Image (cartoon, rainbow, N blue to C red; front, side, top):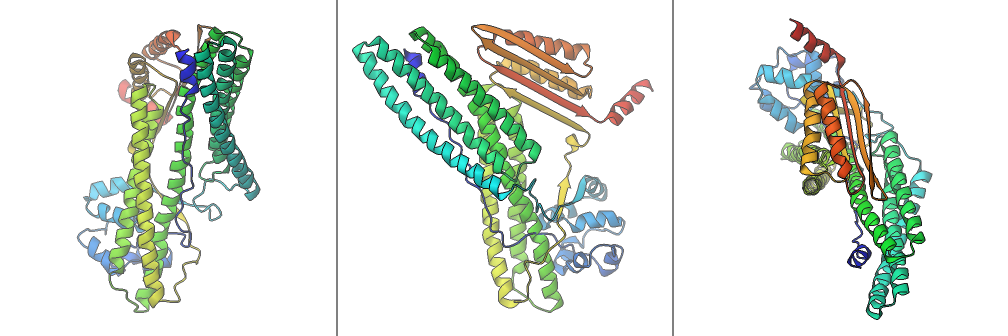
Length: 489
């Protein structure tokens, strides 16, 4: 009976998905690089506005560095850096500077997308919002009914009415299942309307949520067929285990949505510095000055840089959380990811407030300033050294023991060290007290790697609920060939 009461007291997991927004009045932001006139002539193929955007204040920042040996391509990369990164680069020695610039890519952005990953039709957005509101209403209703059934169950228990106990327990479990489904529908609707997810990313989330809704619907059918307290207790255990696993996955999907939204704001904020630099260059040409404006733009750039770093760390923590099945570790990592994302969002809000002041001051002295003029949109991408030629994705759904997690980590490390490209999926399903373990492997594994796969699969035969581990590794073939050549030498 304690298990039945516990399942009826399930705390429904909520994730706030209120859209994050920064005022849209400006489109882009960029770094104006100071350099000598003779140095700028070497990059005359760059846009004229990039050249004019180089200010004396930037020259003061860079005068201690000798950029004479830099190619036009590297100069172009520098000209696209924001103030904060440019200042960081100015402190590097020649070798470090060239190394960092090699990792920089300037990617042209589709002006129609404006840093969005896709365009969702207004009708689809409206429909998704309607579904979200409907799901939220159903969730509220399910929670109310769940609480009502809990009270009725306690009354039936006090009176010793076995029939009423079974009925109220069944109805309570069904309402709990409805609440889970409604919560999943909310996350699903947000994925469907999000323009910060690619079509592929959105489809993957929707497909995963649909599979989990189907799983809960199957559980509902089993609950309705239950006739004894033992049956109810068994179904309560299954629902509880499913919810523990599903709510983690739902939170991960929501984190994808939230961090994707912050990324979009960040990219638009980075681009805004370019627009400001164009306008400030125009003001300089006209002899229009605003006291302290450079300092304010630098402060804006610092806030955006802080948000960029926090978001990067948040994504790293989020990736770590997805790759562990140890409950406490996963909770801790997800909490860190949320905290860092919140800090990134707050930094962008502060940057926006600074931006509003900058725009006000500019408009007060330069009424011809055109903040709506279209700019060439570019994205500065700095490749992570460890991800340039390799890709490793690990995802765990369900719970692992520390020993099982250690085996999984050893397998991933072995795949990385040997640069083995592979797809490995191991899944444990629990049905009627029996555990069935499936494993699928694509790619050629070493004996050590195959042994670790087998070890992990065997250990999952004792799983108490569904567990799924998925590893995808992809390495550049050129690296593997080079490694073989070295070994042969």
